Image 1 (spheres, one colour):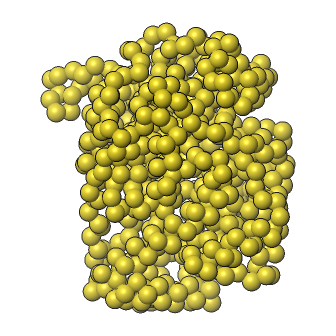
Image 2 (spheres, helix red, strand yellow; image 1 turned 60 degrees about the horizontal axis):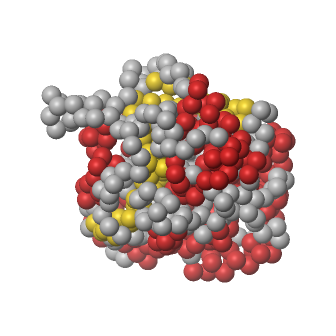
Image 3 (cartoon, one colour; image 1 turned 90 degrees about the vertical axis):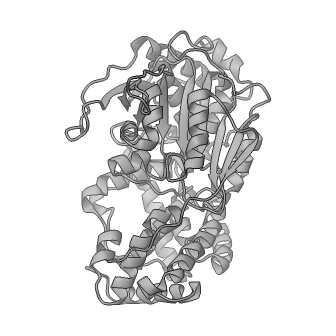
Length: 544
């Protein structure tokens, strides 16, 4: 499921991706269930791998005994002193916990225990709140800095805010599939209806990328998957000394959060799933990406209509069709002469894909397009051009994304299936369809064994109440995913932001959504089966 990631410290931590009774007692104390192989095996009869269950118990027991030694962060020279970092050790292969082990990096800011509404009052500490921003391939290492923001101060008073880099990401046994120096190859095409010759080029590139993953990772490649991400999360819980996990996952983080809830329901204290991926095994991941591409077409139309409503500012057209023609004109010009020598149609499409994720970039993207068509490419180059200083991070994120999605599930191995499905979809949803297909095409030629996706579901009373959040017009994780997640996790509550499409709603501009999140995480209160919030305000047009 292709997802956008933001790397700036606070934006990554707390931008638009952020964000009843307790199922557990105090957070510091003995585990809810014994961390023993027998207990783990008995806890989940539907577990796909009893040996891995036993290995998870062994790893969790070791982590609970060792804890995490927090100290200065390796790249924290410019970070607040309250941010501390450490590592937790997990098995590469949970079926063999005494074999190769890897270390995951973890970050934390301690609970302030000061009520932001009255700093003279102390609030009780509620343990650790662990966050994952999704991807696959995104790092949550900067998440604890969210506590500096007003929307997060109440949570930061009650909880230690904990982020981490999942396996393969950053310094956590980093995965790579190609030389980062080759990652940005300059201006590229992005045809909405590719020729046969172009398709052959992309097939060759996908095969080469899959080979590169195998050559660089070796036998370890198969172990980068969602099941192991969920198991790693339980080891992290134990290392933090938590009786039950309090977790917030966004985007892909909702999927392996739901996997965690299925494998370890008795280990969950509270869980927020923000912008939920559809966990139906039939949607993981090939069909889910097709549904995502279709949803982006609707969100792209929302953006065009907004630009048209502000034609007096941007001059790109008075209707959505007019704005599309302006965009197509820019594509044609960039194909003939890349802006700044680096921005071709592919870079343009990538930049404007962000507008499908986050409406807070609408004004900047519209202004850049308007200026380019008037003869000034500077803003477009700045927004769409490659940032070579971030090449290694971007290549690492792509490698982890590819490995997890390819390992998680069977994919069609016959190019004719991909060609048929994407050709049909591109007739009605041309904006993102083929670009999404090229992103995932290495999975057709993947050299590692594929898994069968876990049947995510819990029985009534098995899992504490959870909170699912969704924007009704979210394209990256279409709304059907939130409904399916609620159906599969018994007792889950769903909060919907109506008529809105920003991907990730917790900790954003919608006070109604944030109030439900605070009530749940601070008091354990859920809004019943379903609550809804009016949309946040649309962005204001940017006037240079």
